[in-house]
Amino acid sequence: MPKVLILVVEDQAELAELYASNFKSQGFEVDIAHDGHEGFEKMKSERPSLVLMDIIMPGLSGLEAVELAKHEPSTKDIPIIILTNLPDSVEVQNAMRLGAADCIVKADFTPLQVVEKAKKFLDPPAEPKGPNRRYLSS
Image 1 (cartoon, rainbow, N blue to C red):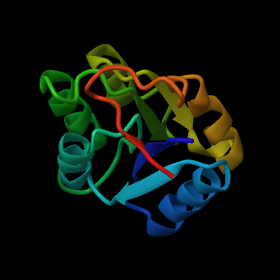
Image 2: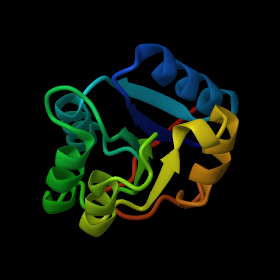
Image 3: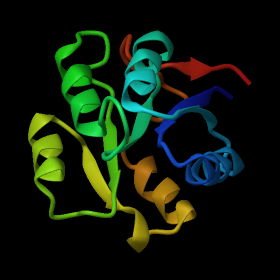
């Protein structure tokens, strides 16, 4: 059965690994990027099925990465879920306006709950759709 690739873009390494571990335990393939620039580059090269994007990161922020991704033809259809602890911030509002699929407040969800919430944005793994989805063989 094909596996779905999830990209976690989070500058806190321990938190990124925690999210990755929970996705892997549910049968997903996972890659990690530690800033917005690396995340955007991996979105272009790997074409993940879903991206979890921290909004506040050094260098290229999550907001800037969302803006780049939604203007790039090869990444514009990849769902991006914003991760934040500032749910009412201007950055989150702007990310949603730019095309982010959803926002998750990190403090309000366990990593396993994040996985469950993210699943609703994924195409069924048995039926890959479109050139922007990457399904890896198991």
